[in-house]
Amino acid sequence: MKETKKIRAIVTGATGMVGEGVLHECLQSPEVEEVLIINRKPSGFTHPKLKEIIHQDFFDVSPIQAQLKGYDACFFCLGVSSVGMKEEEYTKMTYSLTMHVAETLSKLNPEMTFCYVSGSGTDSTEKGRSMWARVKGKTENDLMKLPFKAVYNFRPGYMHPTPGLRNTLPYYKYLSWLYPVFRKVFPGAASTLAELGQGMIKVATKGYHKPILEVKDFVALTKTP
Image (cartoon, rainbow, N blue to C red; front, top):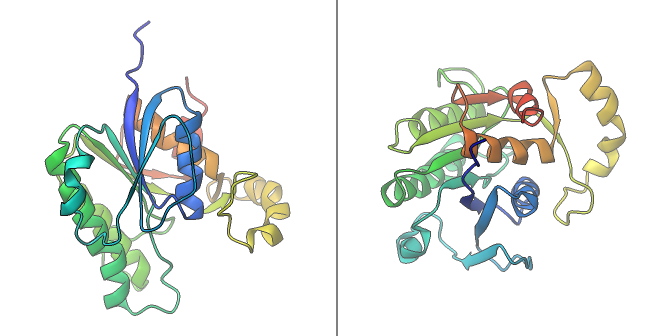
């Protein structure tokens, strides 16, 4: 049996709930040999596989680009909520920031697999009524035009947090008890954060047959050898 090549991965957003969850799966996975995290402030995480770059301006990563070469995957988990934001500002923080980092990485690592955390309900037409869904749709569409080895857009819904992680959002403690029921009734709308991270590792090491993964896709992926 052919052995799967171990990967070196970049994770953004590790000081947020989703990024920390994906980072946790990378550190646990035997298929990931090294992880680089890029944060605006020290994360406090330590692990033999882990490297960290502190960088304030994600709209200009040119000062650190020499340190971004030689990676096989990027798990892009950096994002903001659209609540209370106008479209121009949300577009800047979601589309412009993501595209700048992705464009830089595609030039440095053309054999890289780029995984983007989007969201359930994202609008691929870019023409719907929901502002955040249009912006996410444009981000997905333009990421897929970049010269990466592959781009995969993950569209999670409710993500059940990984126990013991420090950046779980406070309100999840009021929702967690509903998770088993929610998953049973709406299997296409709920996953664990662990399944999201494991799904990203799986597509980075083995690929997938389509570029947009809904909840059922990446949950099923975690159950395949």
